[in-house]
Amino acid sequence: MSSYVRDYDIVGIVQSYDPDTKEAIILQKNRVFEDDKVEVLRAHTPNFNVKLSEMFDIEKEVKTDVANRAHMIFKVKVETPLKEKDMLIKGKKVLEL
Image 1 (tube, rainbow, N blue to C red):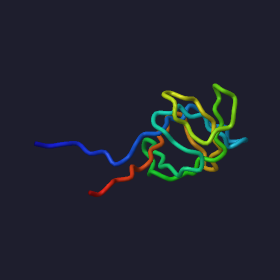
Image 2: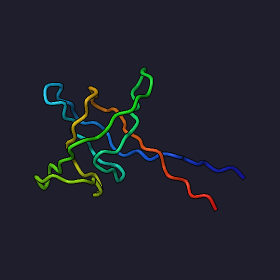
Image 3: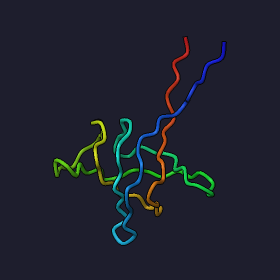
Image 4: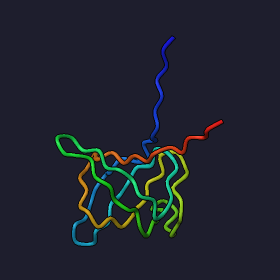
């Protein structure tokens, strides 16, 4: 019997990035917190890490420290330029028994 084990979660997909303000609009896929460090997956480019700062819930128009609603649209400050459709992933914590 074989099984597939994924040790990361897809936390969001980049919708847009403004290089002037260094703000990205993200479509949330799994829970992610302000100041989390995430890995960026982009076609034909080595993976790299970024920190998500100053999180803002676009729908509720309020600052937040977590994106935790299905398909929530949120804005964050990201120093490294991102591209539309970049995938953001975060490693899972593995519990050892």
